[in-house]
Length: 178
Image (tube, rainbow, N blue to C red; front, side, top):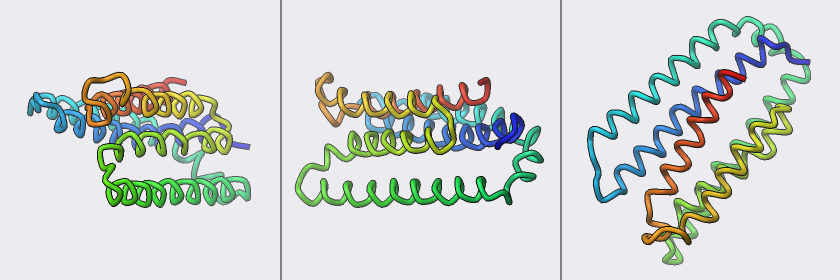
């Protein structure tokens, strides 16, 4: 069974990824917006780096506990399933993205990507016994399912990218404080 310190290290690793992917979603939204303000890109990068540094510090404080249990059968099983789930997510992203582009629905690639990312959090929540992933997944699924129908630009609106980025950043920060 994972210790408190190994859980903290795991959450910090997740927060490092969430900080980077959250920043990438926000930068994509900024680039897709009609305002495309370079100062906002710099701000997004700085915020991502801040969360990344906070997460790395938390990880270094707790990494010994994570390393100590890395060879346990339960840890190896979790790692194997994590890799399978993530590989499945990336395969679906590429497959669905290509299908949408090839059938003339390229505008729907971003909502589909947000949906797939959200869905991938659901099995991870159970795998890591971390209910916060259910909330992250549900929030991303809700964004993907609603923003194209609630914004004037439909699926081309940067709102989806902004929402996905903010959800990932908030999840990162929560993971560091929980």
